[in-house]
Length: 163
Image 1 (cartoon, rainbow, N blue to C red):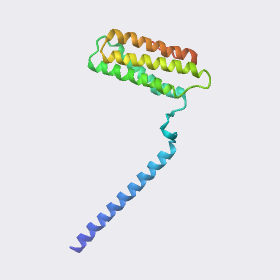
Image 2 (image 1 turned 90 degrees about the vertical axis):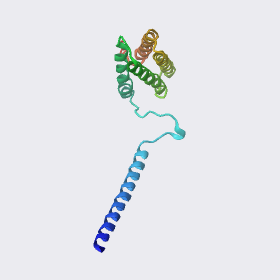
Image 3 (image 1 turned 180 degrees about the vertical axis):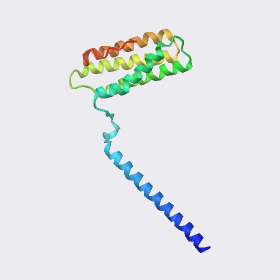
Image 4 (image 1 turned 45 degrees about the vertical axis):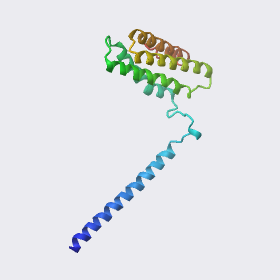
């Protein structure tokens, strides 16, 4: 009986020790991760990725490609409208993210383009929310024109987006 109790006690002690070590390890990892990703004071917005090409490639490009496919559908069921709403909202909010990535030169123009793209994306979002296919098509093309205007000025016309 004593041997069984002693064995169970050792197992419990071992499990508690493992749990404590795991908790300490997780806390250390969490602290190391938090320290590695420095946040600006006061919760100010700051880019996670400083390279604008990387940002565009991984935030805007896949979102636009999904939106383009959803907009190409002749008939839009609830799932297609949801896809259009989602991607339009992501692109519109992406315009806000562009505002924290102003270049050193032509920052005022950058701001105008970012706001125009954001607003056009927001209009597309609202048209999709209303399931208004005609308005969504018009707003979609307007958003692309705003994106292309920025690309013309800031990236030598690359890429030129097509509906």
